[in-house]
Image (cartoon, rainbow, N blue to C red; front, side, top):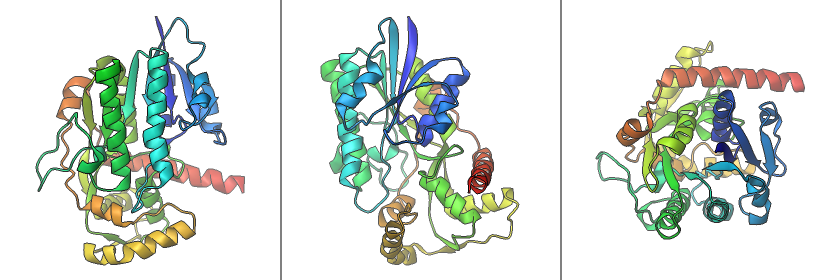
Length: 340
């Protein structure tokens, strides 16, 4: 039976990476995009686009109809990544209720696989620096922060549907995603872009576990055939201090004169509320919030051993990720300048 991939969040950072890899293999792809999305990048791929919203189940029906004789593999990436101190009601609506809508239709139309892209934030943090491995038990009560709670709630719902409704689901937990093809929604990529423009004179002490968007995309695809139903897989890279990321960025970039002072975490915590409010007033992504600072000082010692053994996951070197991200940001900047 011929397979078709149904990608939610197809116009997002991860969604575009998945679409690009699938199209390169000649796979048939149908992507869900928001009604008002600029889909010029996706249009070039030639995939079938469906405009809808995961919060409106009736708008999702066209994603599934007319697939008689096909084997539908759903890759559910649509989500709102919210690092603000308190996740917005919309974040819960998309991340939890949107997932429930997709699960309902995956069951109704008998999807071959349902790949749910969750987050390492859905996994309870281990004390100290102990290794964090996969779990099958999730709860908003086990994690801190609004975004983490939405991802934990959605993950638990998916696991329950595996048990009670035979949903053929597999859950993936990426760490902090970075890499090219972002259109201004990825906090890490935005931070790198701001740093290159000289807009980040200081950064807090701390860092996070970072993985390349292309490696996560490859595992979303691989999980369809290699993942085991009802299993969860961590897709993590390595821990990098933000000062280290900016140092490598400076090394790769021709703008080697850019400097960034590392400040103690307590100073960053004092400044965070003001910086968060200022970003919201300017309608920009906040780069420093009380929640993001908590993440920067949390235990991010994640194990991807299971994903390596079962899915063939081997994250690439951060230098390649940053080099390609910088090149992408440069091309994006040039395109924007020409369109003015």
